[in-house]
Length: 75
Image (tube, rainbow, N blue to C red; front, side, top):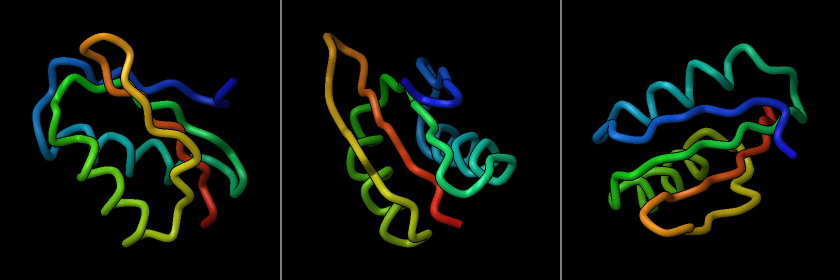
């Protein structure tokens, strides 16, 4: 289970990324953030975000119309 949950359902790019970035900034290194999103573009956005920031995309999956991302803060 993630240390923190971010519900970004109903938000379009770039809001889920911006909210995740803010949430991760307040977390200790090694902490995990679970993000829920409904924007199909979020899949590529979170992959690129994690590559660019060095955070680890632990899991990316879909449940119905919800995209679920588990990100480990490595900063």
